[in-house]
Picture (cartoon, rainbow, N blue to C red):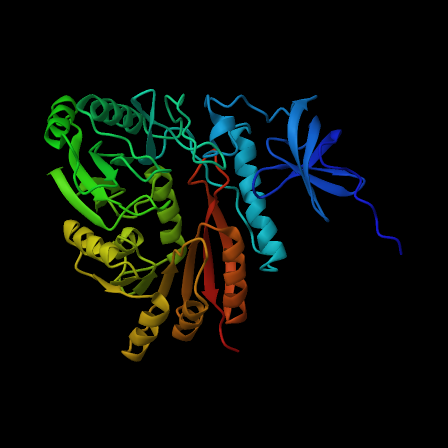
Length: 461
């Protein structure tokens, strides 16, 4: 049988009709059955496309002109949307974003988990899907002798220097970045140069409490010495009373990692404070704290609903971080055990438990797959286990430990549908039944989607 020829070549200009979307939000069209993936294309649209890459089984194109725009196409409000890449889907209506994310979860439940019968509910979205992020880390550069700040252009380390605002950041964060840059420039703090590995100021990080409006400024530098620091602090704090904490983080390495190992308080508090529901949190420079507290509350409320715990239940929270989910669970449970591999996070979790007067929580440093078998040997029998792993999903040792412990219920909070589906298949084969899945839109305008899953242990026959 003759091998079918690829019907397009690189640099061809073609007319393409988009039929679907990829999990990255790219439009998908076919030429004689050969799929082309094109950023910014929407289903139902016909467009002029330039072929930019051809592989054996699929190719990539560049959108040149849309001939019949979809009713779901909107004008991105961000001036640098097509340069930045931080958001990928501002050109879609919010309704389409939510539907696409639900479909993304449905697809992996079918293809990877083989759980077509499990309901995947419509995505829980935001009333206002803008200005939601409470944390920004933005690189600093120099142009014409002046400091500039802006995100990197797509697939580059070139700062977008005409970026005045970020429409998914809290307004206060935007204003604080501008203020820090302006004051640092005036007092003579030099920008870091990535190519020559010289200069001082690498990044500005701003964290803001959504409820409290308390702000933390973190200055990330290559050098241990921060010149003109007293003058900088005086002007910033006198002008902006919402600033409660100024932190200096030192990162001398040639690296893309933003934060270095050494952190010290220059002025004010080590922590700022915020609340999600009835629970108060102390947030340090390195704390992992959800960037969208509005949706975090909805996510955790759904996790609590699925956990269905009462005052007699013992709960394990694997990957507990600074105790955000643990403390929500502790409002209802008899006892909560949290485990996390990052020692600083556990230190913060203990601070947060004390801050809320919760004595029914206990935290341990270590990997969940090592700590949980030890707890089992010590006689711990959880009624419910909650997991909220990183994008790579749960370690297989942890999944086995969960199955061995045999809780009546597991709640899985996921930020990656593919690894979620893989792990659900293992838990299903280990004796658990997946009851339902609730996607939650934590990151509007981007392709990321979080899900909460309810699993019940099957009754032995």
